[in-house]
Length: 143
Image (tube, rainbow, N blue to C red; front, side, top):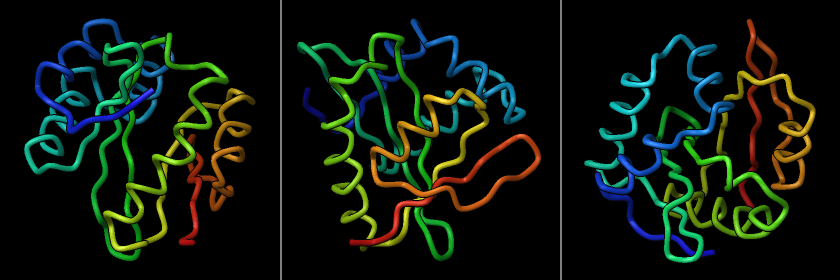
């Protein structure tokens, strides 16, 4: 697995075959697919998005923005992305993004109640910071 700066072609490829679980999360967050895609496009144009590549093909996009005391992430992926093999890479990559943001804490919102989501965040080094109305904020403290 590798990464590169995200392009509009990568964005189109990810959203053309978007994981149903991702579409469900966007819906739970109050966004339709086009609105979510537009949010990623804005981050992409500002140079704050990476494409995660497996076997030469884009499988996910992670975007970020700095908001107050933390950096917030957004994520989109194909179903093929969700496997044990990607966790090790993502654990290292999220730290790269944190460094790009000046070592701020990273907040990631999840609108999923699937138990594997909380486990995945734990493995990546995040802790559950807060639960809200249908969402959980996971936070990765600075190193």
